[in-house]
Length: 177
Image (cartoon, rainbow, N blue to C red; front, side, top):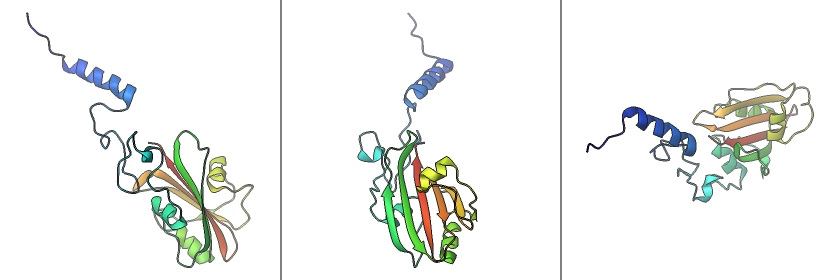
């Protein structure tokens, strides 16, 4: 009796079915889309970093660093808030606020791949939630936002109030991939 070997079509069909069911088909975590977290380790379902990167960052500097940003020189009164009750597609989220002179705030929007500032005439519901602000921005407010080019899972949104010195609101969200 001849033993039959599965043909390429059956192998591909099985791989597609497994991919749809499990998210991977014989691939390592790296090849299946898992990305190293801020500490450089790749999260697994067994590790506590699977739902939150090993950041567990307490300082504004550390939180900003997770998303490729740095607190501008001369910034004061920096505070960080870890958001809870996140939507299903958001793995972790933070709000950072600080006060700095307006020139440094505008420079912040030109750093870390944020792309520069634009007039903030209105905020979307998502921006309002990310930033933790309510209502329409004051006239003269500026906004910038982008994904972090080195890790597109991080969405960064920045609102600069019109005063000088000014309060800067930063919303950071790491989306599931």
